[in-house]
Image 1 (spheres, rainbow, N blue to C red):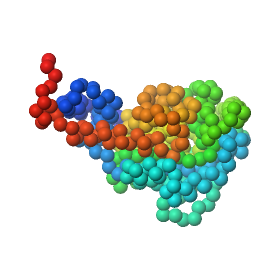
Image 2 (spheres, helix red, strand yellow; image 1 turned 120 degrees about the vertical axis):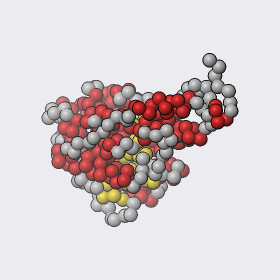
Image 3 (cartoon, rainbow, N blue to C red; image 1 turned 135 degrees about the vertical axis):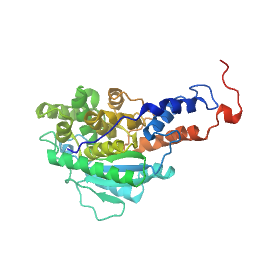
Image 4 (cartoon, rainbow, N blue to C red; image 1 turned 60 degrees about the vertical axis):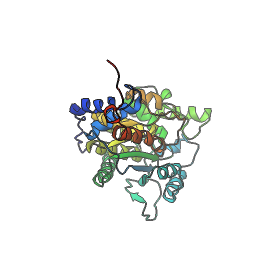
Length: 346
């Protein structure tokens, strides 16, 4: 596997950034989380005047063989159909991204379909979907490393083109099963607390999903390294997101983390390179069961709780204006001195 050189942000500028925040015309701490965001972005960019440049949403799509075991109420064909919806600009992530002036890139990581060439589609297909992890490893070690490398290459390209804010979304029927399995193994938690209803399972379907994953984990004893677990249980879109996140952090790019599946990709990335967490802003807590607990495992506090569970990067796009507000107040808000406003009396 390619090694990533991810360094924690230099803290030398922390006191100066905090002083700039504290000198704004407000009581100390009055902007709450926005102040912490401003400090984090300033440290990531090593600047007293950070800027958000060319934010991009990268939506990775892949199919999952575990769908054969009845873990989703939707057919696998929906993955392909939603990719076409993304390309037509009709999905929720397209709508929200347009609202904020963001580009959306759609990546075929491993959809079980051969798409016609399209200017909006990146062909990074590793295979026609993963294998059924209830029966065998989802991917070979080579496929897993290839997916990581493909994601890293795409994120590196965006950073080279000037983007310093990246959102990673996904589409893949069955991918909440992969995410829950990854969480269970890497966090050493019972399957039952990691699994949710995904795209809308009823009680019977939920129990079947739990049983499928529990039985699968009992059979997968081939190693507990993050890469081995990812290969055994992950999806091509999850692996590509993990690689993209690692490459983004290596280039000091801010990562706005989306929901349950994206956070499971980050979990893998953080097990490989823990310093990546310095570069992450956690956008929201998904309504998918397990996400709140996964955020706790990562020591993360989400910005929003909107009851969303769509994926695609939608929750992260919705949180982006909070990042903008943090950067804008740091740069544009008057200081006590410049506004000739009296500060706190000591």
